[in-house]
Length: 423
Image (spheres, rainbow, N blue to C red):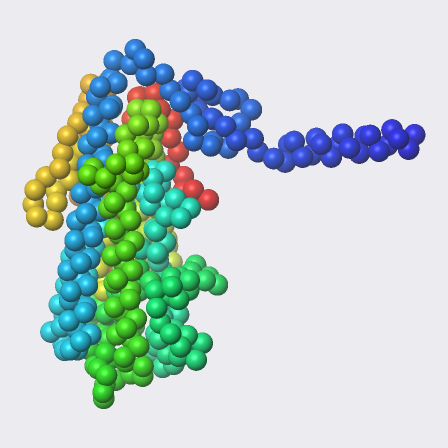
C-alpha cells in the first residue's frame, strides 16, 4: 500500500511537471514543421518555398528591408556624431548659443532614429538579449536618478560623488535601469534631460525644460558639480555612438558574416513574418498603446516620450513614418536621397488588391492622424480624454486599425503574426 502511494505520488508529480512546463517548438499551423504540442514558439518554423510563385518577390522584399535598416542606422549614427561635436564644444566652453546648438543637434539626431523603431519587435539584434535598445532609448526617465530636480538640489548620480567617485562608461552603463525600470542613466533621454532639464512649467505656455547653460560652467554657475555634469553629458553621447555603431555594423552590406547575412538567409516567409510582426506590434501596441494611449489616459506628461524637450510629437510622427517605410519599401535619408525597392505593398497588391487598398488607406489615415496632433504633446493631453474622439484618440484608433490590417495582410500572404508586446 505504501509502495502504491509513493508510485501514485511520483506519477502525479510527473503529470504536474509535464503540464506546468510549456513545450517550445513551432506554433504556426501554416509552417512545415508545425508542432501541435508546442505552447511557446521558439522561432524554428520553416515554410515551403518550393513552388511559391512569389518567392522572387519575397526575396527582393528582404533585400529592400535590409537596405532600409542599414540606411536608418547609418543616418542615426551620423547625426549622433554631429551631436557629439556640438556637446564636446559646449562642455569645453559653455554658452547659451552652444547649448542651443546641442538642442538642435539632439532633435535632428532623433529624426532618423525614430524611424528605426519600426525594426524593433522583429527578432533582430536591436532587441536581442544583449541588444542595445534599453541603452539607447529607454524611457520614461526618473530625473532624480541622474541630476538635481526642483526641491532636491543634491539628487542624482551627478551629485553623489561619494557613491560614484568616478564617472566612466562602465559605471554609467551598469547603472542603467539598476533597481528600477525608470532608473535610466544613459541614452537619448538622459542626454535630453541634461540639455533641457526638468519640464516643470505649466503646459499652457507650451515651453520645454529650462535648464540654464550655467549649470555646465566650471567656475561660478548655477548648480553643484558642474564639471561632473559636463563629463556625464560627454560620456552619454560617446556611449550613444558606440551602441548605434553596433546596429549600423550589424546591417552593413559591406561587412560579411553580420546579422544582415543571417537575415537574408532566412526562409522568405520567416523574414516577412519578422518584418510584419515588427511594424504591426509598433503600430498597434507600442506606439498607439504604450506611447500615446497611456499618456492620455494618465493625463501625465511624465508618460510622454520626450517630455523634457517637448519633442514627443516628432517621436510619434517618425515612429509612424518608420512603419510606412517598411510597408512601402522606401526610406528618405537625411540628405534627401531615397533607398527603395520591392515592398510588402507590391506583393499584397498582386495577391489581394482589395486588401492592399484597405491597407494603403489606413497607412494614409495613420500618417494624417499623427500629424494632426496639437503641439506640444503635453499640451495636447489636456485638450481631450480617452472617451472622446480628439486628435490623439483619432490617431490611436487609426494606428490600432493599421496594426490589425497588417495582421490581415500577413494572413493573406500565408503568414501568422501577433501584434502583442513581448513579455
